[in-house]
Image 1: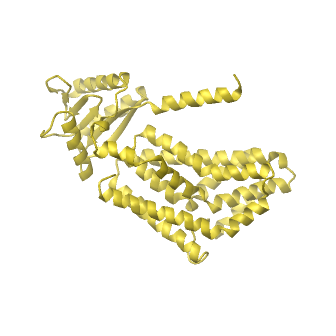
Image 2: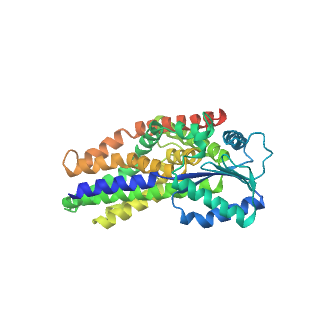
Image 3: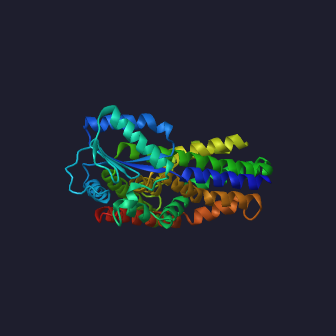
Length: 375
């Protein structure tokens, strides 16, 4: 079996393992001691169950209460005067320490007994590869949320994000430096190192932000904030199409550009290209933060961590695709760095317009969906 076949098998196995997860839905209330004890217990045992994904909802949010009512009814316990925490895993519901199992009488449990029963329910759900409790909510928010976030929506945002004049400029400068230094043989390696650094850095930053949002349980306020940010950045990018360079521009600040150029122009090695890619992802973020942050906010509201990671892998692949095409084009002689830079400069306004329109529509769409109860 060749290297490519080995890689393909490894990729499929990794994807299969990553995609298989068991969802626990956890409703909590800030300041609830019982919630805090159960939360601490779940955090303590979660490393023992890497397949377990915990989706948290604050009962102080109206949407969460609607979802909770639908789940209680779906589990056959309607009209209950419930107390937090409320947990759904597999076919088991734990409502304030009272366990509900199919065909059994409700069983009140406290302390260690509750923890043992909850861990048994988790093990059973994992062994049975139980579907997410949210799938029981027919046409409700849980199931509908994941379905609303379609691949075309992620593709659209990632495509707008990939139209990034800042990163284009840095890559072209990097490849041009290698050519001038007589390192044509290093163009492909350095270009791939740069693209890999961008991909890895943005992916890791995305996971960090996504996890922080889900862990904090901040949902509706954050969605409104990132939607407003996307609208603002979209309008500002559209402004750059009609009045480029006036007032504030969604690009690298002018005072940073000489430093970026000096650093990039000094790179003649593959490790150096990777380092420049990491710096680019950290310091040139103003060019591309809008769609990414908006999608992260949406993912945090609509998916589990496992599904969110898969979306981020796919999103960032689209994000770096133009950079990869530029690298391959220069390496194989289909274009030159001069032509690539000329193309970028001539279409700078249009790049801002495309990115701006998509960001604006994404922000407006998220707010409308939030108000209509789709997210």
